[in-house]
Length: 123
Image (cartoon, rainbow, N blue to C red):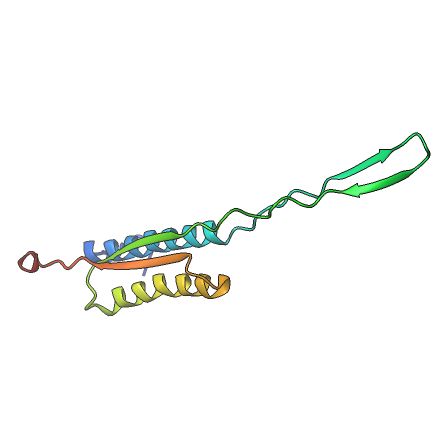
């Protein structure tokens, strides 16, 4: 194919590709938000001296590392769950959520898939 020839892309293929990219960004952003490490402040060191030449170092306990984990619900709309493409997109959205939940040992990320069938008669 020379550079002058243009490949025609159907509207359906374009929407599939765009939907997959958007879904990937949403799931990736949710995983990045949930999995970001918490930054703890360094322990505070207090040095005190008394007039009797008694010197010591007192270390304060560190502050709590993190607040309670945030639960995130992700909604994912697919074009049609009878298509192998959208089934793989659904699996691709649910697998990282399962991995995050397995890693932390609790359900922090929920990916819910909705089927948007292009059939007005089914509405």
